[in-house]
Image 1 (tube, helix red, strand yellow):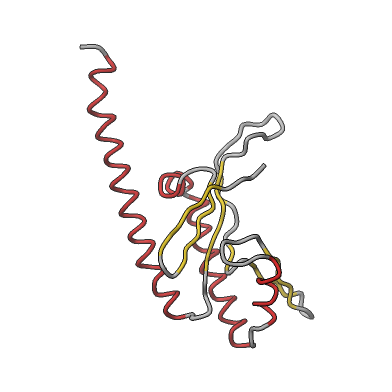
Image 2 (cartoon, rainbow, N blue to C red; image 1 turned 90 degrees about the horizontal axis):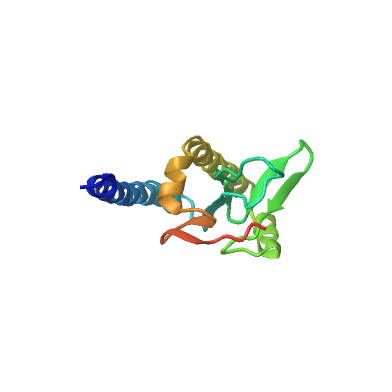
Length: 158
C-alpha cells in the first residue's frame, strides 16, 4: 500500500471533521446573532467581504477578512457632524443607506453605534482567526448575517 492510499482515510476524516465544525460554527453564529435582530428591529444586516487578493504588487497574496458594516454603512462623528460611509450591500444601495441613516432618531443612532461595536468585535475575532472565517464561509465571498440566517454570495474584488 502506497503513501497516498495510507493517507486517504485520514484525509477523509479531516474533511468530515471540517464539515462538522463548519456546521457547528454556523449554528452558534446564527443563535448568537438572533438576539441582535430581536433587540434591534431596524437591523437588517451585518456584512463583510473576505477573500484572497489576485494580485498584491509582488507580495504574497494572503486571505483576509475586511471590515464589517451594519445595514450597508458605518457611522463616524467628528464632534460636529455625523458621517455615514456607505457600502454596496445586499439590502441597501448607497442612496438607500444614506436615507436610512438620515431617518434615524438620536436613540436609534445610539443603538446603531452599539451594533457597530458588536460587529467590530465580531470582525476582530474573524480577523484574528482567519482560518475559521475561511472554513466557515469560503474565499472570494461577501458574508451577510440577516434575520433569516447567514448567507454568502460570490464577491468580485478586482
